[in-house]
Structure formats: C-alpha cells, structure tokens
Amino acid sequence: YMTAPVLFSIYPVIFLYTHNVEILVLDQLIMPLLLAIVLAVAIFLLFLLILRDKLQTSLAVVGFLILFWNYGMAFEGITKIVHLNHWHILPILLFAYVHLIYLIRVLHRRYSLENINTIAIGVAVVLIIFNLFTLIPAEVKKHQGYAQNTNDQQAGKDAFYPGESDPDIYFIILDQYASLNTIKEEWGYD
Image (cartoon, rainbow, N blue to C red; front, side):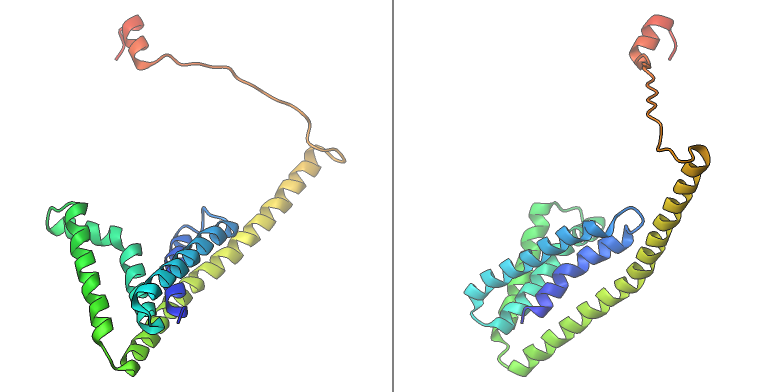
C-alpha cells in the first residue's frame, strides 16, 4: 500500500530534475528523492494512526501529496482568476481535502478503493516513465560531453606542456570601480 504514496512523492523530484538536467548533476537527485520518500512514509504512518486502514491511508496520502506538490501552481491559477491570499486559499483546499478523505472513508466497496489505488499507481508510473525517457538520453549525452571535454582538455595540456603538469601561475588583478553616487558627486556624471 506504500507504492502509490512513494511514487507520487518521487515524481515531482524527477520532474524537476528532468527539466533542469542541463545544470544539475545526477548525484544531486539522491538527497531530494530520499527526503521525498521519507516525507511520504512519515505522512503515511501519521495518517495510518488516524484512518487505521492501509488502503484508505494510501489514497489519502496520495491526495495530500498531490495537494502538497501542486499548491504553488494551484495558488497561482486561483489568484489569476480571483484576488485571494494564502490564508484564503489554504483553508478552502484543506476543506476540499478533508471532504475527499471523508469520501474515501465512507466508500465501503473495497474493490472500488483498490481500483482507484491501482489507477493512481498506473498514473504515477506513466508520469515517471515519461520523465525517464527524457532524463536518460540527456544524462547519456551529458556523460559523453564530459568525456569529450576531458579528452580535449588533456590534449590541450599535452600540446602546451608536454610531460609537465599545469604551471603554478596566479594572476591577481586588484581593481575597484567607484559607486554611482561617487561618480555623480565627483565628476557630475549620471
């Protein structure tokens, strides 16, 4: 029953990494993924104490994670339509979320909840796979680029310093510019 919450917690991390793959390193993905999984497990355990049913807890946590990870986007979308602040929107969203949990609690058909959970897992898996189809080729290309740059740098070093390491040369330029106020006061230039 932890599958859906874990998948919905790691999807936003993978999504953000995929859209910033050019400026990030794959090692930087590990800590956010771990934190997202810990968040999902902690929320699952907390909700399990309240709801006392693993399937209902799983669906409630998925709903919470969707609300949590998309709150900024929901806030921006709502404020484009109506001028509201966080203290207006957050209670409205929490009110809707509490009613979602109530709906999950009163839905007594076990197979319906299992079907909803299966659909949620399928949606999360598809979203993650779509991002991996973008992420994996970008990482391979980045790795090949690093290898090529390393070879080019080594060839450049060999051409300039055959048989030697880089020379120890430090070129320090101490330079200072006047502030805009000083330029205006001293030279009358704006």
